[in-house]
Image 1 (spheres, rainbow, N blue to C red):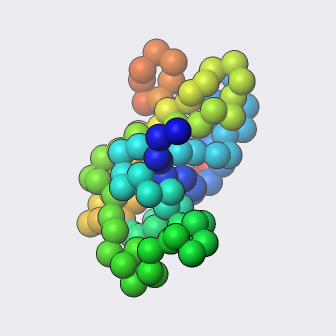
Image 2: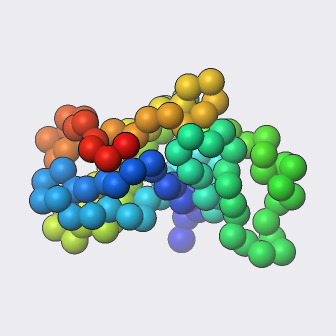
Image 3: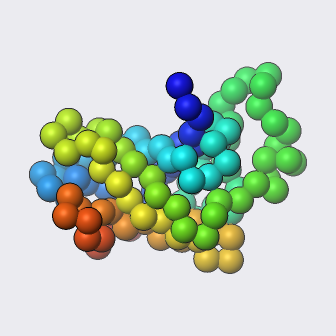
Length: 110
């Protein structure tokens, strides 16, 4: 099993093809240390590894790349659903769902 990070976008996300709710997101463009990232935060908010997690002070220094992709397997018909994300001044600031045809779709509920 490869390493990845967990992501929590702001607002509700739905499959662009059928409207299924998308709740769990992961990605491999970041540090891939099982961090939990929340949109509008610069640093990871958690690393649920118990005694193996890095110190909070060290975690607060970790950042995402300027642009990154996350994906969800919550829609059984159209998995994975991808989203393109961006950071502004080091803070995760946008998440746009990518349709099956490769076009970025505006997201409701942000």
